[in-house]
Image (cartoon, rainbow, N blue to C red; front, side, top):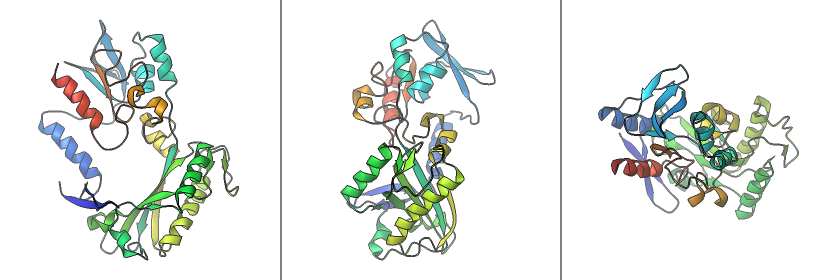
Length: 312
């Protein structure tokens, strides 16, 4: 797998896959198949089968069963695990109640842009920064988060701008560019607009709501990059509704698989009654963003579970 590099503001360098993020997924999948593993897609795992207190396999929504020799590892959230995958298994009522109370955080809006030319930063040093943050300062950043916490669209969003073609030109035709704008701490179901300019309707991310919020974000970008939005030749916007539809682990649209506040983190993640990766069923393990150490492409939870399985 080829790799380019992303320079952070502090000068550290993190490798990113050349050709697009799917190359990372393809490489990880190749590691599995090279070791004799098989990857099945487009299949809904409906239940974890438990006999005599231990998991013996998984049943799909079409009734097909896959037997487990050692363990079942679920990359999921505790509500999905205890209320769905283990719905037919006897689980202590307090633990199941905690799973019902599992909280999701706020949402995310990602604006993916196809550009006729690279972004024209007035300060060319920004071409070497992988993911600069656009904000008018700590006060503005704090205000935007507070408005999101109140389920209001922020009047002046703060966000990151990621132009990966600056570092990996293979991701776009010659002379063209792509850009991703990521706005975090956005209400999953906004109940209003902090600027009182956008009608949020019933809170769903309709086409009109998405377009108007995108215009607000791009108006901020244009103050820092003069050829935005004039260089935009195409766009695709991911909203909390998009995320929820794509991934059940996102709940109503949280891209990070559950709130990461202190009441649901560290020894309380994923649940107070399950402060770790081993579940109420001894040979069923959880990994993923809902478990320690949380979200991010770090492989931490997978490493922890792998070490447990290797010592059995």
